Length: 197
Ligand code: IMP
Image (spheres, rainbow, N blue to C red):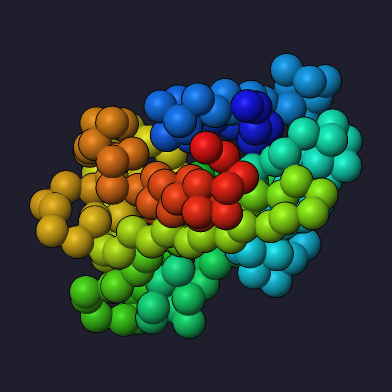
């Protein structure tokens, strides 16, 4: 069977396709069906935003859809930036701007700066929903380290590692990531519900 993944991000598509490959599920991109529209993610939670994306793409193509929404929560910043992770330093800002803002905001707090990545993965087929979360816990360090990955990776050190996510190889990051955990749990839910074999 086919699932369409409501994302325009090639990296995410590859990572999630791999998780479903052994279950005879082909994960395709909306671009293969037409296009990935600009979707306004104005939900108050990761789950609300993931559902907005899944519903929109299901409405467009009528194919069972998976979607996700993710971000960083920093304990000392009252779990900010949360759903604002992509635009923490303002509309159109860069990853670098966001990272600098986090480090500036954390200057008045002492280390360790506990934080976690959250990913909410959703399935929608017009009738059934499935929702699963995945987490990656760790801390924000006071400097930029590493060149791999994206977003907050250079300032986030996963618990039990002495490297940032940006210093890990991509396969290693994917094996511990919030997204990997959320979609592995979603796959299990879909099997239990009989929605994939
Ligand atoms: P989205 O789920 O693609 O909307 O991600 C929202 C934002 O969360 C991204 O723009 C990043 O700033 C941040 N983010 C999500 N996942 C990661 C990750 O694995 N590493 C670093 N930043 C992330």
